Image (cartoon, rainbow, N blue to C red; front, side, top):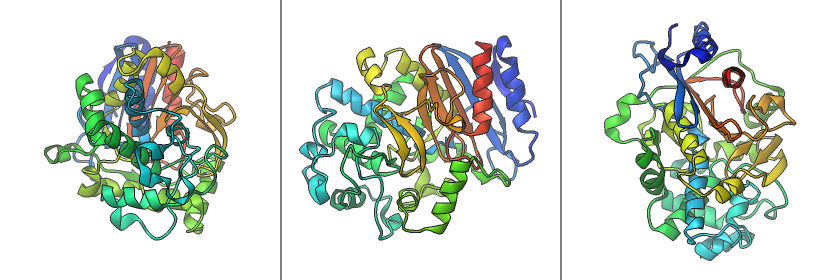
Length: 381
């Protein structure tokens, strides 16, 4: 299948590899963007955005990119830190007194952003019926007790991250957190990254489908087995209570959902453009960017059940796990989304990379399709 878009001559190998992905009849659609500094050297898309294969993928097609939005929320919070409205090491309860319930009075913004807060998941009962009600979820989260003391263990806050940081933004800035991100980060820079898609743009949203036979790496297989077989395991609760699933990509409630940690709809160029602007110092200072990308936590993550390294709201290159490597430099940072989307940057080479897809694979970390494309991009440079 021939891809549409632009590709600088020296990156022809990437275009060929991207087109080769679609030789698999299970592939639906996807897009790829690579920027060097502010220059876009690759911006390609191919396939279809519907499940029937009748609607072509376009430059402005939006795909559900799930948790790739977490660094946006982190940068928004860090902008408020630089304004003096938030502090990294003051308890969350200082800004949100109700949050102190359940032994959470010592959790700081740094704990939340580095996934060491001790509140990575909701216990039962089922939170899915209330997940679109911000006030209800905030009240439930404020009442939720700790799983462990903050700073003593590592556990990815699949959905709790977005609600905590979002509520801190709301309480210290006054705006809805998704409005803040739109007005301060995405809109001024023309980034097609949406936290709640406007109804008039629903027609642009692509639909997910699962590919058969893609079982993933051993860590992914183990995690999927746990989630499928143990309804009360902390990982199961983190990913299903409430649930973040590609199945939601056909639900208008999900399209409109404003959650700054788990729900986003984007183009590949929009995600790559965020990292390009971030590296250029357009959001936060160099000093704050260094703090954002400095290792804040590492070890076996109790939610992912694999070795992880985090900065302040970003995933960092994992040398201990080749299946989680960005296949670029040692200081790469960024974030994945469920089912295959990813966006990250290599600060040494000033590379911003994003791959989005609607063909959900079996890897819970970096998808092999994106790894191969990233390795080719790095080799071309």
